[in-house]
Length: 264
Ligand code: CA
Image (tube, rainbow, N blue to C red; front, side, top):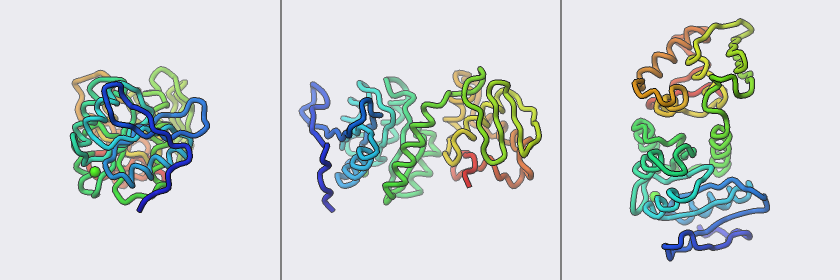
């Protein structure tokens, strides 16, 4: 299906060495958040950029994996939406390269895949993607996920130094200024790492974090920890905050190797 051209769409040269033209979709905002959309299916690419544009984001649309690498190495983005199967270079390879170095090392990455099994595999690989959507997806869901990922990226990495806002979600109250935790009205003593893990998850209800992302957020540069450390910490936390740790209602295990805080 051909989509109508966006009224604010304009075509610019992306890169001095590139002859290709990139579409940039933009509406009014003075300093719009910038989203890189890498997708070889034109209809999906246009649809995604159209709706991100309507939400006020600036969208740089690219169809080729290698070209995406060039652009991602030179410009920083607030979010990268990346198709898994691309000509030139696949989404996992691109994600790993982006995570290794460059201006988008910490940018949230939303992976688009054709099938759920592909997504499971990608997230299980700890490729560095933060979230995924399987095709076909609804644009409202895409916009919601995009917004959630960008919000999350703005949140502090940890609340270890008393930074970050207090939160109160599903009966769990977290106060970073004194590392205080109350669950269903009862004070709960937690370690610094337990607090940080809980804070990251509870700040983003419904968002799946792979073990790898949790490691980089909660433990940061401590290279001796592994995915197993995340499991152990989750287990300890569940004993402290869940009514029945065997049937967790707050910290949920998600397909593959991820965890999320319940948003139900
Ligand atoms: Ca594709």
